[in-house]
Length: 179
Length: 125
Image 1: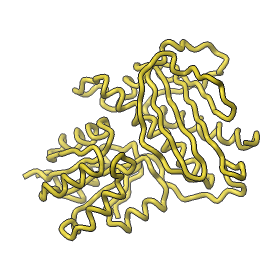
Image 2 (image 1 turned 90 degrees about the horizontal axis):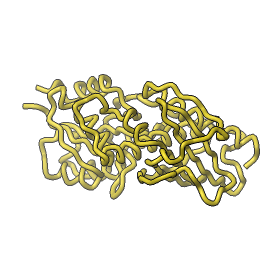
Image 3 (image 1 turned 120 degrees about the vertical axis):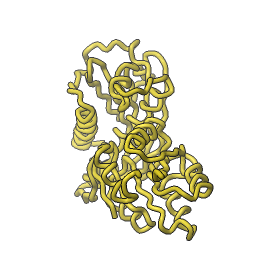
Image 4 (image 1 turned 30 degrees about the vertical axis):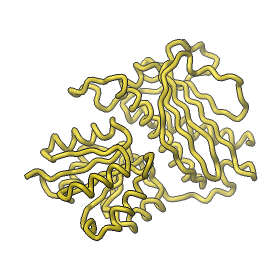
């Protein structure tokens, strides 16, 4: 991937993250990856794959507290069980990939989304071996550090985003249309 | 009698969120966790007034369920609204051509969803 394409990718994924957490009502700060992260606190991970002309995956890891404070039923009568948090972890990851995909389509690249899954562990942001071509982001949301890892394999021509771009028409989050 | 609405989504969070919104407005809500379960529910319960359905689900996705439901002439008038993180216009048009009644891009706004439901099935009672 060229440096230009990498920069577009970083912008797309970063904007999607900030957009989503802002819509949940949380200020979001992008962290420098050199800042120390309390890895032991990262214990829930959402994971979703995608395929087509480009293929890869999105991973979101954070302390369970982050998924608790962003849960749409927080403050309602619903008691959030571990199963509820697992489900929301996957669903949040799914919605984040949806925002990334919308931006990809606007830049002329589509992909098929899989179904998400969630796992629990310790120090889950650690990756062995470190791989080139993987976008790593760290964000501070609601006092919690979130690690986002986006991996994409380009098609044979090496272009994640077609050049020139052929934008595809897309709706926005929250849009509702009745036919 | 309250209108019965079927929510089809593999996420229990979304099923609960939509269900709470609709039940709070007086609708009768039932759930299914994938397209296959949704299809079975529609076949078994002939008094469903509206289906709200996710797209990307295991076993049977929302478009597959939509096509299977509409293949049965008994379901010609059953409104199905897609609720999904997918936003591409081509996909929305495909759903429309396949017989969907509407499309909502997640995350949904409860008041907006409720207004749409009332337009489709009327008030809850």
